[in-house]
Length: 314
Image (cartoon, rainbow, N blue to C red; front, side, top):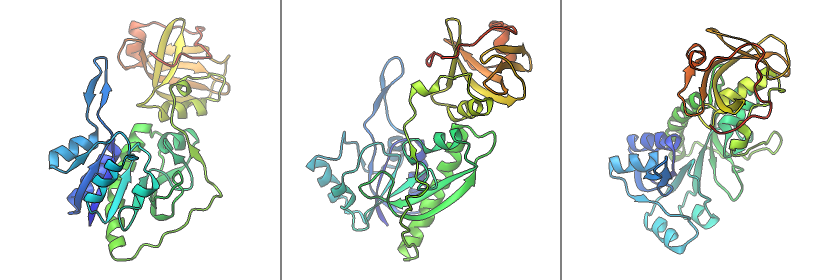
């Protein structure tokens, strides 16, 4: 099938690689303009751009798709269908209507649950047992289009935002290839989404990363997992910012934020209910370290207090 592909991060790049590998004719690749990254603000291409350049695929990086010039470029591609995955720009209705078969999206949740920008992190934060991939027809709403096909996977007890992203990226790549094959055979029937059970996955902000030790240990542990690798669950002690990368909820009690023990087995911090054993940490300007290594360079003792209202950057 002749396709326009629109996507930006690694999640999308895996889908593009699968579609290209399956023999689809990629008439045009849309991705966000290169963005300044790091202290030197060097322009860095997206994962999708890197893959498109590697395979010599036609590339287009508009700042938006509202200009007539952008529409002309898309129209000239003469694609049958547009496939979208984590593109990051709004697609106006006229753009969605350009290909004869419209546009379909690879979304990382089981719609209608977790419509929006951050479905992977929100599913972990909420303690969901399952998530998955939905292949949906795009319409004017935010992830409200009819679902063509979907597949669920369990969320493991140790899944992080990063590990679940990778599982869903691989599933999305496989499912979109399967969905297009079924679409060509006329085997897929769009299923309108029910509004019952719909929820919104708002973009993750740095302000959310701060740990409130008055919350239950289980909820904080989910935050640590959901925000690994970005933006990282944050706390602080004194004037030193910390990020918590790996932790486990345990049964113990104390004043929220109080260190109950600190040793090679971890740093135990009391929460609103239960406690959290911190296993991997990072201080401002430092590296991610296992608890024993962290304590060797930054000693902590029982009775010390972590801030309830944490700093969110280090």
